[in-house]
Image (cartoon, rainbow, N blue to C red):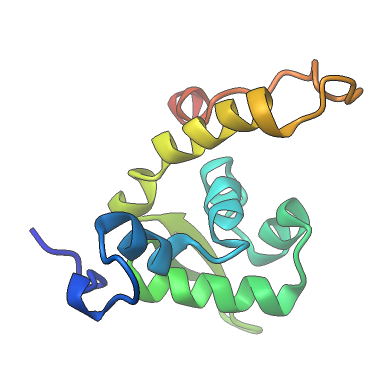
Length: 132
């Protein structure tokens, strides 16, 4: 089954491959952090902005792109003013193992050994999702 957001490999620059196609959809700086926040239960725009630390306009643009790519879905929960909540689609949930791999790689290779927060417990996204 093909996703409506699937990209033809021939249209990608450089060496076209599925990694390049995936990065076209979720490789922008804030995209995976938005997905992380939604997976952790932040479904409202303000909570997603707070969790990522990104500017509001960037998160708005990223959410729109992720919705267009069928990674997140948006539903209205308030009429006046209109407010929306965001949930991961099946495609978005399929990214949770990717987030887990980045979490483990980050703990092993991207965080300084003398960082005072290094010992903090960071649960895997899969574990967190299972508890919800």
